[in-house]
Image 1 (cartoon, one colour):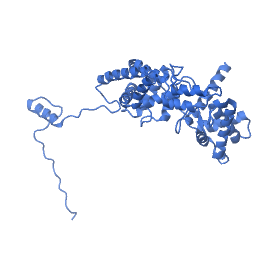
Image 2 (tube, one colour; image 1 turned 120 degrees about the horizontal axis):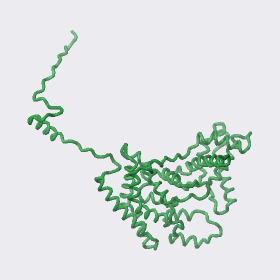
Image 3 (cartoon, one colour; image 1 turned 90 degrees about the horizontal axis):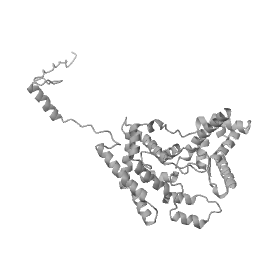
Image 4 (cartoon, rainbow, N blue to C red; image 1 turned 60 degrees about the vertical axis):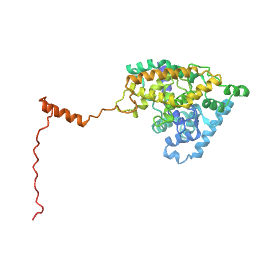
Length: 382
C-alpha cells in the first residue's frame, strides 16, 4: 500500500543520508562513527554548498551553525549529550539551516528537499558498502568459515566480553548521566567491567581486535575502511545515539568484507577463499608477534578478568591455521605462487639426449647451423 511504500522511501532517504553522515565521521582521523565533529561538518558543507552560497557562508558561519546545534543537543539531553560533536539528528538540523540559507524563498520542507536533491546527494561524499552476498555463498569460503568457526568465536567472545584499556579510556571520557555514581563508574572501569551483551561486539572493541591482530593501522587497510566495514556489517541502521553491536554472524561477515578489501593486495585472480586465507595469515603472524595479545592474556589473569576465551581461541586458531598452511604447502597467500624456473643446462642435456637416441623432439636442434649471409653495404655513396 501507499503507507508501506512511503515508509520504504523514508528509509531509503535516511539510508543515503546516513551513508553521507558516516562518510564524514570516519575521516579524517576516525572517532565515533555516530558523532560528527565540527571540522568534519565544515568539510561536508564545503563539498556540497553551491558556489553562490559559499560566497555568502563563511567557515566561521558553518562553525557557528555546528556549535549552536551541539548546544541545542546538550540542552535537550543534559550531560548525556556530546559537547562538541553532532549526532545524526543534529546533523540533519544543520542541513535544514543550510537549506534555509541556500533556498530562502521556499518553505523549510521544500528547501530541505531541494538542498538534499540538488546539492548533497550529487556532491557530498558517501559510504558505498561493497556487495558481499555472493562472496558469502562461495563454497570454499563457507568451508573455511566452518573450519575456523570455533576459534574465531572464542576470540570474538573475549573481545565482546572484556573491557580493554583503549575502549575503557574512551568510555570514561563519555559524559554520564548526572544520577550515575562517579565512584561506582570509576571502580568499574578500573576493574574491567565486562559487557552485559556478551554475544555482541561493540565498535570500540572491534577496533581493538583489528589492531591486536594486525589488520588495522597497516598499509593494507586504513582505519577509515575498518570503520566502514563495521557499519556495513551491522544489521540495524543506527539513526540514533548508540551504534548497534555485531553479532558473531555479523563479525564473520565483517572479516569477509576485510578479505574482499585485501583483493587489491593479493595476486590477481585470487578467489575470495584465497583472500580470506591471506587475512588468516596476517592474523596468525601477528598473534605470534603481538605484545598486545600476550599482555591481554597476562593482564587478564592477574586482574581476574577471564582471558581463557582469548587463550583457547588463539591456541585453536594456531593449530587449525598450521594444518591449513601445511595442506597448501606453506604458500605465502599475499604473494604470487612461485613458478619453478627450469634449469637451462638440464634442458639442453635432455634435448641432446633425444637427438642422439633417435627420440623425436618437438623442435630438434640441427647438428650444423648454416651461417647467415652477410650483406655488404657500400662505405660511401661515391
